[in-house]
Image 1 (cartoon, helix red, strand yellow):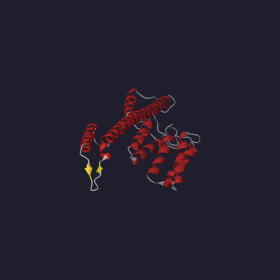
Image 2 (image 1 turned 45 degrees about the horizontal axis):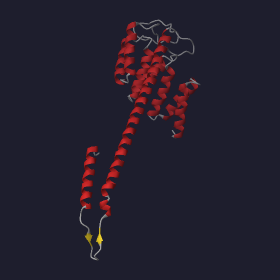
Image 3 (image 1 turned 60 degrees about the vertical axis):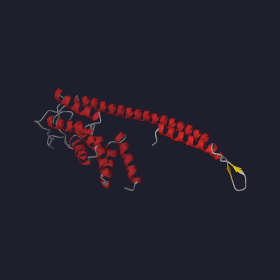
Image 4 (image 1 turned 120 degrees about the horizontal axis):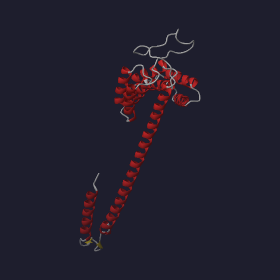
Length: 261
């Protein structure tokens, strides 16, 4: 693209050339008539008009670019605010749930309740600490901060270290879920599916179970496992009716019907 100075230089040359052409003596043709070149004489005026118009267009483009940059900034700010609100809500839910859980620690690693320990018809669950300790809370918040900052690979590393170091923490279900989310964003669908399935199978009563089940359906869709995706998404709509995840599942099912999946 030519710079503004280059354009001015080019226009100046054209004006000089036009003026020089206009200064040439008239031409006498074979019939004895004197002819001139009015187009050449008016060339400087036309070029000045074009130059002014070009400058006006450049100003308009600059104004539009400024508006686009402003809109982009506003959109990014809104996205960050929405993400912060969502993550803050998740943190508050963890704190509330930590006061509700009344399960003791069993050993140094999560233990799955057997059929004799659980009531009839209940699903397996993992024993967690009743309340988070100071160390696991700090470790969880560190991983959470990486996620909030959009550092998804770093958050995967942090949450993985958290899970290994604090297997009985009350934050474990959330850690599995966010490991799945970060992997999903990185399009590591295999890892994401593994983490989401841990939430659904080990913590079926946790608040993240319904979100994890929805994401499993989305992953199956991404992997073109149409039948499995349809079954999972339909299960979401029946297991969690009148919920946000049910609405999202129905929208994806509608999309699949439109695509003849």
